[in-house]
Image (cartoon, rainbow, N blue to C red; front, side, top):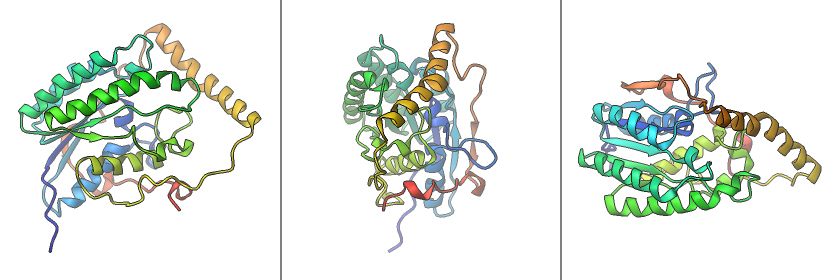
Length: 275
């Protein structure tokens, strides 16, 4: 029996750099990302029927900017599926209130659901075991727990990256340890399919890859030093100057467009896949 096409025809993604797709570079230098990858699969599963996609996410955006700037733009496009993933930049800050952040998300989800659209909410990522970033783990955990409750109350779907075992592998992360690598984006797109109640394209999408030999203490210290110099210190500098990495940037795909073959992205490096 032929599988019926998926029900959505107009998908809009809102969020920050993770949804913009940073570090998942195409050959031309532009970024793809998990949302682009998800849109490509959804288009394929429409079985030739119309499917359109917009991505309004911009790097560096705090949750308040996502909800006040991007959400109205998204609603104006009259989507039937919206992914909302934000708050990560907020929880990096020591004074962030995860309960207040979650309350803002709930208001947004209720607004979207009132239009009849489905919503896919992205959780926080578990940073346990990651130097420096694990200090934010408690805030991200409270935020994520709240988002699960919001999904239950509103009928929203959940992009459960918190529970992804494979994301504990450093190969799923770019050098800055904040953004996913191409393989990380691929796996997150699979997680999104599961969150939407669909079959993943790769049944082993969350199976951990074969472990590499552990790095020596010297190698770890050297890597931490490079990361601090090239990524952490510039981030601190932007915070002190009150500037954002996304200042002056606009959305990469601001209007709903048909998803064409050009939107399909190459596979992640083979070494990071399950064995």
